[in-house]
Image (cartoon, one colour):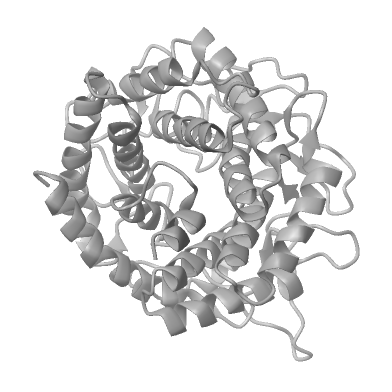
Length: 423
């Protein structure tokens, strides 16, 4: 894409197409895992993180009047599935994986053999889905949000650390002896949405606490390449999963895509805090430097293995480890570029750099990722040919959809509130 007008045209084409493609994920239990052609891959079940992301996205589509009636029905279906099918009625919280079909009595069939733990990562998306559904006025959205908030308070938030725990057994025993940046990053995202939905400053305080620890401290200590893995005491573990550089959720090394994503999130955090008059209280004066450091360091990965695109993982000197290209990485690079190009002040060189790269990332997506409107290839190899080493199928419209929404949204508030305010 050459300029903003091209990105606007891309977004105008892709958002309705993503809505239509995502609608194929509807199954009796919630939303299933979409295959390469939009078919349901039943063997991969209905997974909590996918169901939450779909519910969030259909809430946004409903707010944006993109096939609004169907989007509202799909968002309502998602909320109902999260409240009735995924929710653990005995212990509280949500199961990570259930079958796509209900049993003869119309009850969900949790698959603890597939996903035996309750996970902070997926539970962050429950809070996000509830917040977006609440803002969109989806039936049950406020109930879902309140329940998700209660579980965050009761189990996930670790006040002494100012971050979230990682995972538990289904009965909330057996706390995992591990802490992860990924789950905490998506908790920041959910906290921003929660603040915009409920206006409770505790959510901004939590987002600021997590971000300060992980970005202003841990990422800064590592030249803006954030270590992803930590012990239970939050000691950096640079050897964790060294033999798993393509793991979808816990790969070894630094993840440039998360550098972009964090740059966006901390910028949105500060913009939200400024609007709420809380930026000084939350001590966010470090954000501009950190966002620039994260963004420019992640940008160094572009083409670092000899081909256009961004390697999935690098070592802590920036040398590519996994040269697979994930669609979500480019989506987050585009999203961060859009946010920084708007937030940076005139005269800041990063403003023009980010604006230029927004166009370039859009061009890359059009050339390599978008198979046809609404169908984004989730993974490419080092030559930018389609691949499935880490991601079979096309289960996710969330990263592409959010990037496309951001083409026409302000830096803050978060997605649902911004779309609602723009109507």
